Length: 213
Image 1 (cartoon, rainbow, N blue to C red):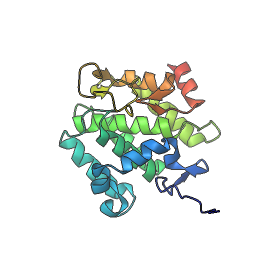
Image 2 (cartoon, rainbow, N blue to C red; image 1 turned 180 degrees about the vertical axis):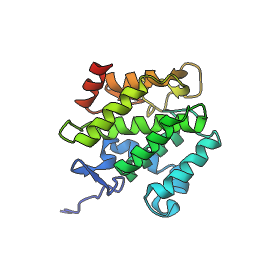
Image 3 (cartoon, helix red, strand yellow; image 1 turned 90 degrees about the vertical axis):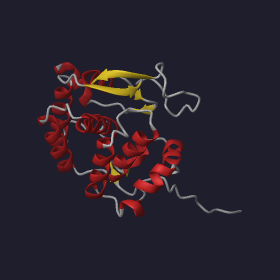
């Protein structure tokens, strides 16, 4: 009998909360995204020449400035970028710097607006387990999401309640794509259990944001 164990090559080697950072994304979704041409050409470790924000951020900004990624949720490119962000696990200082820079701007620039959406979705998915005992991260999360509720910039997105892994969906028609405001995104992230079919883990800090608001 062959007792060889299969290694899950879709998992990131970065660890958070005692598990791989990318385990918050279901295995089948990880495998499908990492198998795409977009991921292999642009986001694999060989092509990024590492797994750091210093290599990832310039590529990310360039893609948004080209208006290639100005639609959230359903596009394969958006999901690949979200997965790569999860795999890299930016340091908390990097997240503070990025969100501070973006929120100080007016977010009229499409690049900043869609980058903000990507970051807050990442934070909600990845840091659902944070509690008040981890004081610095807990305080920052509550403050960022409270601030997001006061932002009304419009952005184009696949509807939040659609499971974008469903290949039968036509993600380019009026029935699946709509215009949201950022405060609507924040409300969804605080009150729902999934977004675009990606699970949002149970959290205590989102209840505090909801109570404050």
